[in-house]
Amino acid sequence: MSSAPPVFQQALGPAWNELGDVIRRHYTMRPFSDDYVCVRGTMSEVWHAPWAALLMPFGRLFGALVPHQGTDVPIEVHYRCHPDDANLYWDRVFHFPGKPPFHFRSHMEHDAGQGSEVIEYVRFGIGMRLAVSAEDGAVVFRDRGYIWRIGGLRIPLPLGLFLGTAYVEERPDPTDPDHFTMKMLLRHRWFGDVFRYSGRFRLGSQ
Image (cartoon, rainbow, N blue to C red; front, side, top):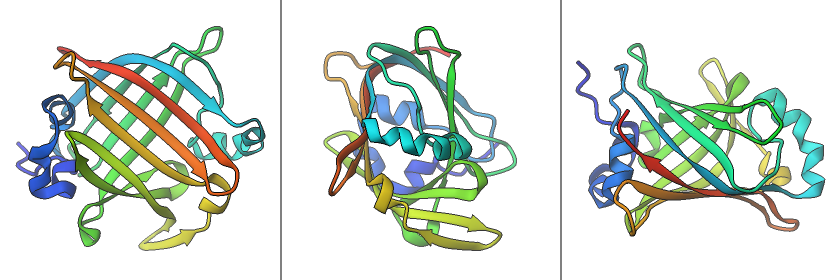
């Protein structure tokens, strides 16, 4: 049985205990294990700027962008660990009306050399460095730039010039101990919001 702490506990250290209970519960998955959690909810908004359609072919190639828009979109998020590594795997499944389920898959690794940073990887070794913090019970992720991992190298990529800077938070819902809200915003310094989505989720028995 793995004794390693969860990925975000490694990144946050003592600040892990400042997270709301529902946030800790759905991320208390041990590296090198077969731990699994699923949360279900509704995205009140999934949106992207009209010109962002130009980025969609690249997003589909790397599996990094949600190509559809909508309101009140059902979603489930599957979180898994794997017995052979220390990563946290995500599979976000969006159910847009009239379309096949859209999967946004990635995995996160704690960057031990950078303290509170994790790196979220999509296909072909493309990753986003994220600073993790605990703020008023919420877990907050702030973009620290993109990289391309090739073998043992991490090559910085200037993707922020096109995509902007990401901000993500998951915050306990004060009205219900088993619910939390989340939002993701990708904002460009000159062009404004590029992508955004937000919703409310329930953590129930698995």
